[in-house]
Image 1 (cartoon, rainbow, N blue to C red):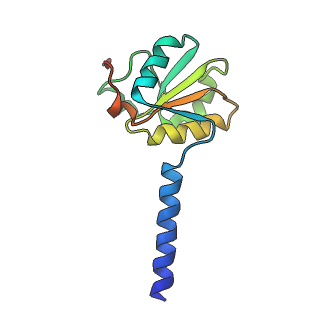
Image 2: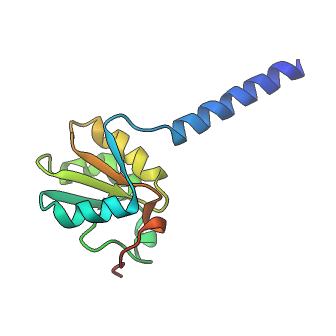
Image 3: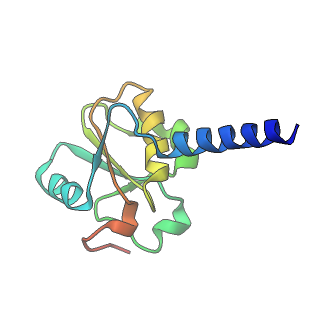
Amino acid sequence: MNTIIYVLIGALLIWFLYTRLAGVKGLRNLTPEQFQQELQADRNRVLIDVREQMEVKQGYIPGAVNIPLSQLKGRLSEIPHDKNVYLYCRSGMRSKQAAKMVLGNGFRELSHLQGGIMAWPGKLAK
């Protein structure tokens, strides 16, 4: 009986890790350097910070619009369909979750910052 419980716990742990760490189909994973270069070069873009408002007060990438992940579903209409969407969060996990939500609503050009704002090499606005 204990063996079955351990196998089930192990399977759940593997499933949980896979769903958190696996790539998102249709999402471009950009290194901090690539992300910074693309933001500078792409004028047809929208930059979205999916962190909560309290986190944003610590600093954000200049030009970013704050749409917290917890509010994203109800605020998808604020994201223009004719722009390339760049997402970031604190570590890269929530921006992946946000990407799943955004991709499910007809957006095509989607990128996110690997490692989140913690990996960002550029200046932050406050």
